[in-house]
Length: 330
Image (tube, rainbow, N blue to C red):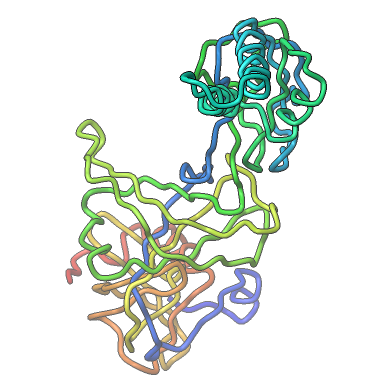
């Protein structure tokens, strides 16, 4: 098919030279950022009681290690403090007797420590000799609150979770992988992650986990890549793309947007020596987002249409009333 220079300009038809390029197979997967489950910690109630006061109330708040997070009321706590004070007083008054008051006092002290009292709180109790029915609980961990805690006045059982904290310095990018793509992971686990919120930024990582359990209804498995988030730029729930890259080799390749996918095969349009355009069926090999390997149908140095190929195809059908590849096979 012949076109004038004006038609070529108006149709924005552009060509590229077919040549050898470094090419590696790629698989791109839609992913979602999740909390790293290894960085989730809980602050629990160490005894049954009532949440007298909350110092952290909302999901998303940041909690420092050592920060006071809630105050718990418990009558059992007051009784245990009284037992400790009596043991200290008996130890001081009676000294060494058949009853080892030093060991009794130490056991009572350890019980209070297990129930969440700190060394500073115990020293205050020893100095004041006044038991308290409330204890302020401090977090041993730093992180962001995942869920709002129970309301003030709620009763909590021993061992129940009051706060769940997530350390977001690392995140998981999780994607669904078709079982047919699993052999690709046997060749490489190198991955790059891009986020639509940060154009041009590429994060490098490796596939750290592939769920061995197959979802039979959909024939997919879960694949996971861990990424660094030291500056807290990324949040769980963000969408991302995971690209798995295979080994690179030299291959005869053309830009992927030069290919026209049809039911009978793949077609490209080339600009021939006379300046005309002709369709040609090709056989393709490995591909990535930008380029596709041509195994058969083109040779080095030919000019392939990379912009306007679909327009040429439609124009041919319109003018000739036939598919340009009718009767061709590959």
